[in-house]
Image (tube, rainbow, N blue to C red; front, side):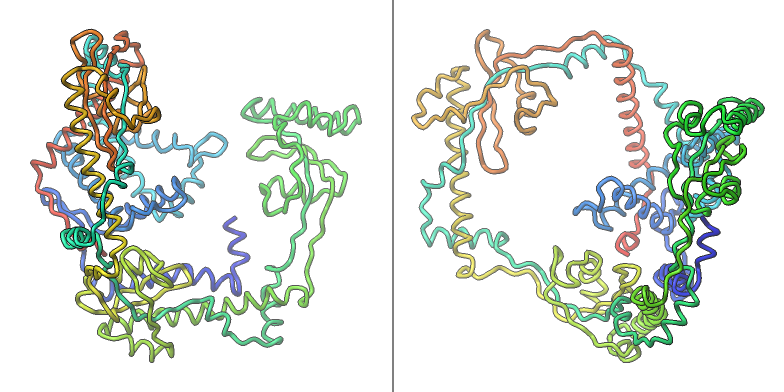
Length: 628
């Protein structure tokens, strides 16, 4: 695969690779020259520094994890939130490392090697593969020494956490008591008083609404907002403006002809005799015997492939290019004519007998048939060169002249654009981009009124912004929000009526310890009364807020009586809870259950240890590192 990339990395593909490599350098590398290469510390823990690069790398890894889970970053997880989470983890890790060093823990070389060899990602055919290991480390910008040290650190930390876990003692009697509480079941009823049903009782008198508005102006605020001036470099736009001639396209096509050809493809099937299964000598002999049966016409290839191959799922391998095959397999398959069968060939999979069924010849298209593709590739190639130049000019000039975008606009021969209104939550155009909004409301842009750093929206689009207009959040005029204020007033008053009615009913119920007081409610609706039986702590028959309150209520000691409590839901509904019975779960604990309890206690002890370490440690977080 790497050789294929090397062979094809010519013309516009080569420039694309250059662009891909150059942009991260421009976005991050130049800064190290401009700031003189000063080391930035993200945090210090008992005098030990956590470098900002560790924060950056860990943040990137956390983003990748979140994106792999959710498909995209959750809305509440912006860069700062992720960095805060990551720096907290890095501080905890540093505290554990310091404790590990102080107590003499250390993973051995043998443990490190065994751990790395057991990672499935580094294995091929179930065995550790050194080439795969090196390629994956390179792809993740790691060298072997760094990764092995990280692995050693992880294993060493595990030694200490295992020591804590192994010291966790859980008497079986206590585990049984805990299990009986966890498995406890409760029965009773709830009665819900709806806040919405009281809205009709509220008179939205204008004076009262206005008084409510004046007392709650925070509910009727405009969002803080800004307009931004910006310079945008978009490679796609640059490509559209690239003028082309037939001569230039013809030359580009000739220089990159291999990019447009369809390579020869060969339809192959095989019989595999696995070395792992039969041993090398046994596999060689078995493959030779099968080949002899085919040559002598004692058996047909297709028959043996179905009954004797150790790869019964992929007998017919379909059409493949030689470059996509294993070298030994490709060499043999490349020599076959249609219908011919090869002698056994030793490959990493085992001994393989190969049959060639069909050949799709290489197709080299005429220039006219791919002219549109060539044009697009040519424009992309040329635009890439201009894009790199403009990005360099934009970043350098806006940094050197941070009080204006004019010098950069003049140097780039670009027009300064102005955005629509942008709030912290969103906007149109560039305001849709979270990175733009983050920069727009940063102290540098909003308060110090300097140009932002280069904001990369994609590998082919970047911009710099500066403040044009700023408006603070302000109360909207009453006349503008009178209807909205009236609705809020009605909702607030309805909640008060609901609360008063609920408190009065609860007091009556608690006096009698039964539900007879409900009989006096003329507007009682069947759907507002809900019975629960055998309710457990993790049940979702009721809202979690109600379930949580149910399990806080103590049972009434008088037989046949109920205990009453309540919960007010976020929408203002008042829920009366009546608990009639409690049934404890089984106290018999299995070995698996006991192990689970022990693991939970170990986790809590580890959390307590970290909490104690944090309380005793001197931890300083560099807030600017979280904001950059």
